[in-house]
Length: 490
Image (cartoon, rainbow, N blue to C red; front, top):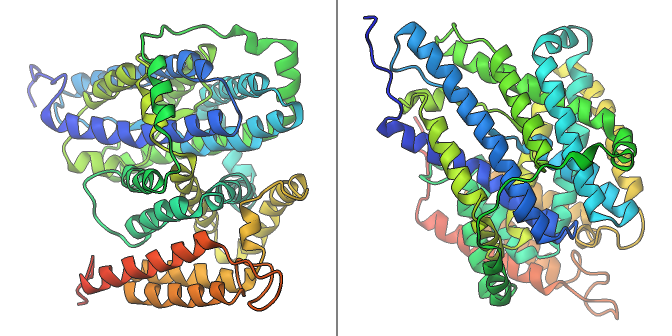
């Protein structure tokens, strides 16, 4: 290849990559906003005036840094087709920070600002771990058995992503179930879609929420007051003695999950190597992600940043290095103008929580996929302490009102939900209909979702779950008649 090859700043295929990467990350932002305002009761001025501009700072450092880094490699190699490794907001640490650090602090203290600052400091510490992690994590992996490491991570995923999110879904079951089923059909049913699955699920279930009267235009009107231009603000008060003292008990969580995401970054680079790009190395990209996290934390952003899997997909669509420029621009436009507030006003929390359920399930599955079957008992034992901690911390009556919907007839419900997902995975839509009708019958006689059975004084079946099962049966019956996504067997 000649030495005068021109490396394009941005090419048409970079647009597809930029939009796809941005919307994948921004779906996590929507979830975070909903939880911070809805669950942690954080003031919207902090969310849109401090956190979002801080997120923009992190996105600019991350994506501009990676663009420059990979562009220099392309120039050095005279390779105009070089593809940059994707990066963005990390779901794992984001939701662990929210549910296993910030929410407990808020629950104990009743102080949303302290909880927010602890989350931001956790992000700063996680960024520091990233900076040094590229050098020491390979050595850690030689010492700590995979079953122990990933088992502990699975415990966190089971408790704080799966169960905590499921509780929120079941408090608005029709809306949450709609979003959950769409995600299951697309992800587990292997349906090819043009838009990110998360946005399809959020969009459709948000329409359902508005149709049911669960949302108010008053919130949309109020959100207009957040439109403006927000400059990033430094948040050096995260280093106060109060915040540091409140953060110290969560250091084990911060360290373990940050190390896990460093491993994810290493695996992201390994994906590129498996595609033939063996000249990529992981130290500098992971350090860029760590620096971006530390800098954005200093401007009030608790949302973690890191490298993504998915390099083969970006290579397949022939993207280059310039898509990182596009992502940076999109985050700046949304994050500095307050437009995120309007988007959030249209979307209830129950529409986005299924994303966490899916991520939690995937994380739990991964814990078993990365170890040999003989180590499964070790994974189960390693995940138990975190799960037990979550259960004991929420043992008070009424602490998890959504999960109480599963108390009556839990054995039946376990089989019903499990069967529905099996049939979705196999694209056996009519069997989902049959299972839903069985669930409807059990609900109507009071065997599930009711304290007492029909004919007793305590008979009180859940009207929302009656709607859930009727609609599910109808929708999957229609999918079956359409031969939707039916694979032709060889």
